Length: 252
Image (cartoon, rainbow, N blue to C red):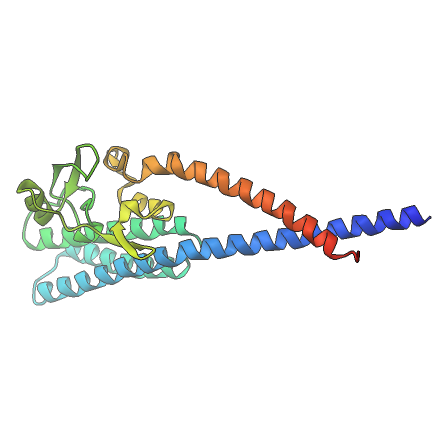
């Protein structure tokens, strides 16, 4: 009878330890996700604000200009994109959800370019990817050969100003993000920024080549190894915590 009581007590202790360990792991995962989400959320609202400023500029430029049905439709599409992007950003719960936000922003900027083209009596612009160096620059105008520091040469879409800079050997105006205490190009920001780029460039076939060795390559290699190591570390740590908690329940 005594042995049965001891066995039941041990089982109860083990169940408590498993529950405590699981809650601790969930709490750590929640903290990690929030730490990854916060800078991505900030990035999303910065890009939304930039689109809002561009819409104000468009509104000022179009004041007094007659807009036909097509221009009005594109204008409304741009305004709707701005509102939809704000709503999507407010609902962000995971870093990968920013992809939907940047998809909306990319479409809104194209709609704005269509408005300007229609008012100027020009044909609609080709649906080109945004400027690689900073998607907030809007539609690219051409592909330019560019070699990142320590990387290989590749052709990337660039806005007019960045294309001119690259052609004369000057540094393009690159979108920077904070990683710790350092500012780095957005493609070096880590796995949380992959969906950010995918929303802007995912529908264009050259995306993988553009980012090869910059961001996406790292996700397939070093980050995967890091996640495996992190998982092993958490598993071993949980075992140690569980054993420690078990012995905390006994007096020697």
